[in-house]
Length: 274
Image 1: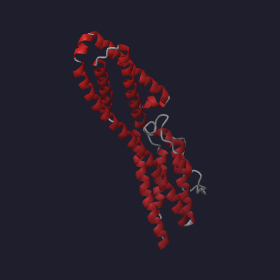
Image 2: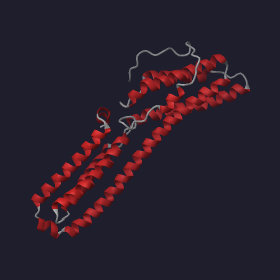
Image 3: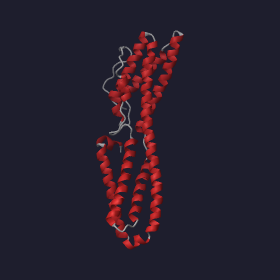
Image 4: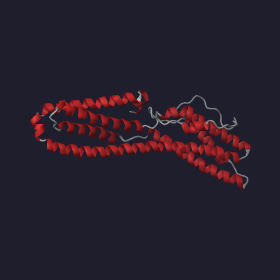
């Protein structure tokens, strides 16, 4: 499903989803009208109305819960990206309190990591992968910080703060990479789609004297269900589609003026993914 969002614009997928739901609704009406006569449907419309209400409430609560959960996950991924960028920005700032040679090495390593993430790794996130060279740049940054030995109290304070930000960075990066592959379990999608079709089936069973009016009402319900399912699908893949998260927080870090120390990190070759 993620591949579909990476190929087609969101509005095409939305229209397709609505059309499919309306076609299924129309098919349900046609089938039921052949299986049952109007007299039979009218005879049991009171019972059918009870079932439509029960299923509608249960499905509506479940769908709302799923949409809220997916939105909270989407918002959490965005906040985590900001935390990763904040950790890098703090390390860039803290490096000013270190000796010049160490400062330039850390600055250049931070700048290179940011550049690789923005220019190379972000495109691979839509495929659920991470960049090998981004991993290497992060590892070299870790090595530079860990191997540094403070010589006085001031450097010790800065070093402690940098270690804390380094831990925040690695944690945020791990979460970002893991969420690229995360998504709603397939069983929940089966329940969502199956439950929506079941609701439309019971709506078709409910008798309304004006057949066309009843059909158009059902189209409205099916269209709304399709839109909500589309929203859930769109937000379920934070790095795919027209609403994919952008590396804006990292882009801001690329404006930092860094004196590059070429001995700190070697430029990476053409990027490939794992």
